[in-house]
Image 1: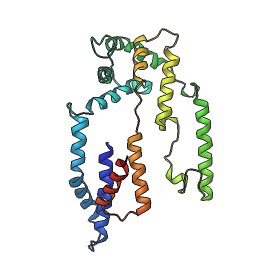
Image 2: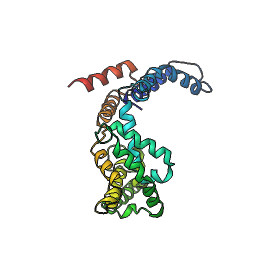
Image 3: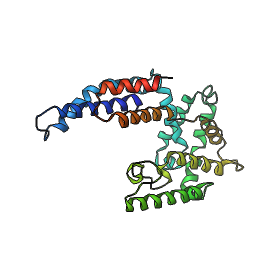
Image 4: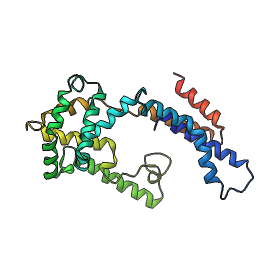
Length: 256
């Protein structure tokens, strides 16, 4: 969901809680239903905006969304679980990356479909050793060390170097590398390198993933907004009016 919608949802929650502070009616039995109605009414603008730019074919970010959806076709675990028609649909969606190789006569996409049965057979008969890929052992070692450190801090009620809040409360729980999007993407890339480099296998898939990997998505813009939002709330407290919070957020993000 877009950053605009998430920030708007935060403002709605804040505004509703402020209103409840001055509403002397009993809260029991009314807050859940009323909040859902209140949120839907106020969030509709954001949801409509999301639908307009992401879900409608003429939306300015529709093609971008379809492109990144199609990128899941290179995840071997995804390929093992999905029917052929779904995979072929995602192959067709690769055209949204706007590379000439994916558009034009679309020969590369047709070659990917032709090689798909052999690829699926290979994945069915070969178990992927994710922990045997380049860099996997180093990551697993760091993850184990971090988990041990967080567990010790939790047991002692202490903080770690993550910040003032206790790390075991603040950090996202990552039980394995699959919970880390960056490491998951890296291992998928290493899987394909090991599979196709120097083997002559699946040349169309090799060509396609070497193109797609050039497109690096970034959440830096959205994360910057939430960082600024946290700075404002930490400095001014959670009792600000939503309009003031929005005003301060726009000031900080647009001051450059």
